[in-house]
Structures are given as C-alpha cells and as structure tokens.
Image 1 (cartoon, rainbow, N blue to C red):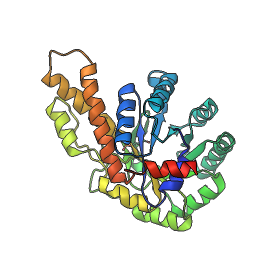
Image 2: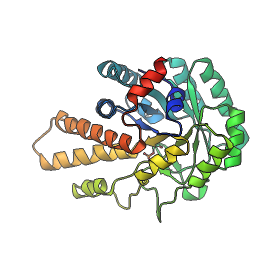
Image 3: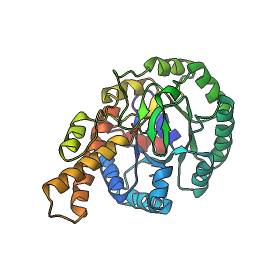
Image 4: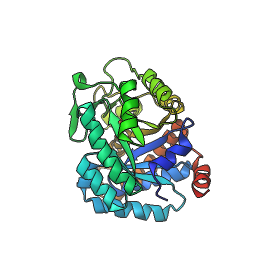
Length: 316
Ligand code: 13P
C-alpha cells in the first residue's frame, strides 16, 4: 500500500525511523520488499533523478506497482530523492509518487524558501508530502559533488524559520554526515545538538538524516579481497540511528550500503564461479542478501515489527 511520508512520520515520530532506501533495478526492488516484509517494517522507497534516467522512469513505476501486488501487506511511501523543481512537478503530476524532496539547499536562504514554497503548494494540492533541505551535506550524490569547504551545518534558528515559512512536511538537516562511501576523514562527529535544538524549537516536526550509510568495513574488505579497489571508505555508526530517531529524525537515508552489497555479491560470485555467465545466479544471491541487509537496518532503526500498528493507524 502506497502512503505518504507524512502518514508514516505521524506514527514513527519520536519512537523509530523509517529506512529510506534507493532503488534502481528489479533485484533491488525484490530485495527491498522481501526484507521489509520479513522484518514487518514500513519503509520509504526512494527514487533519484539518476534512477529515473537509468532505464526509464516508467520501468520503475511498473516494478513498484508489481511489487505492491506481490507483497500486498507492504506499507511504503514512493519518494523522489533530491529533486529539482521540474522533476518534483513531474512526480507530483504523475499521480504515482506520494512524496517528493525539493533540494534547493544550494540556493541562498530566501530563494530556497521561495522554491520550496512553490513545490509545497503544488504538492499539497495533489495530496503529496514534501521534504526540503537546509544546510549543505558533503560528498558525492549522483551528479552533485560538494567539497568539504562548502559543507555547512543546519542552523537551528534558521531551520525553525524555514519550516514555518516554506510549509514543508519534513526537513533534511546537515548534521555532519555526507553522501557516498567516504564520510569521515578523522573521527566520526554527528552533531546531535543541532537536531536537539531544532526539536526544541519545532517540537513534533519530522526531521530527515541523509548520508546515513554505515559502510560496513567487512563489506569493504570482502569487495577489495575479490578484486575491488575501495580505499579509506567510512560510514555512520548505525547504533546512532535509534538515538537520532528519538530526537525526531523520522527518515534515515541509506543508498551507498545497498550498492556495496551488490558489488560484494557480484565480485565474489564471478571470482568463485568463473565459468558462469547467467546473471540470474548472482542476481538470486543479491536479492536474498539485500533482503537480509534491509531487515538488519530496520532492526537498528526500530522500524521492525511496526507494520501491523501502522496499518491499524492508517485504517482508523
Ligand atoms: P548514503 O550515501 O550514505 O547512502 O546516503 C544516501 C542519501 O542520503 C540519499 O539521499
């Protein structure tokens, strides 16, 4: 069942966070739905602009609608990740997306508000939720690369003003994470004081944490042992997910970790089975491993076992 992120956040706020997982192909869709059903967790399915262009946005819609039929107990939002204004309107008008992110965080404050407000008006008129972003995360997210010296953390007072004036339903805040597999050069520092301060200023308002992959070191070692060349990769301590959720972070974005599972499975598979050229064989392993990975993240996010209650809340 496709619902809005707003509906999911109402149930999750202050208790747990929804995993927001990016999908690009059929194997990821299968693994994601299996993992969430296995762990009885509601979730956010994210589609980036890059994913829409990879095959064709209509393939993604087709696969997701099929998954909704194959897994009729699932409860999820279909969310555009890091949209520009034009892509947001395309998704809002498609009647398929239940949530969009307008990322105008690289514009000056007033312009970010103006753009977000325009998207909010159109989205709300169509029953679609809107996530906005204030502050600037570092790292590489598809075609956007933000250098370390351009990173700026979200200012709590500005966040409160932004939320009030832009009218968005949730806000992605920069608290020290970054996109991609290379998050911290020194020791990990997440600025929980920023989310605490925003929660105090705007109690009950859902916050979002981007750049949350944990980049498991075992995964990196296995990839490199199977011929990969990923050096110095580091991620967020996943034990931080739940404390963040208790402070009002309702959505935690995890994309890179899924790519690492894919890379490890395929590198190891073809190393160990050099005679194989049937892509369904590693594909089958990937679906299972990705489902297990998703279930393990849902456990850390606290969303495990929430599906029944969410369904009841949505039906009441
Ligand atoms: P990661 O690169 O840490 O997975 O973050 C993904 C993300 O925030 C997508 O919006």
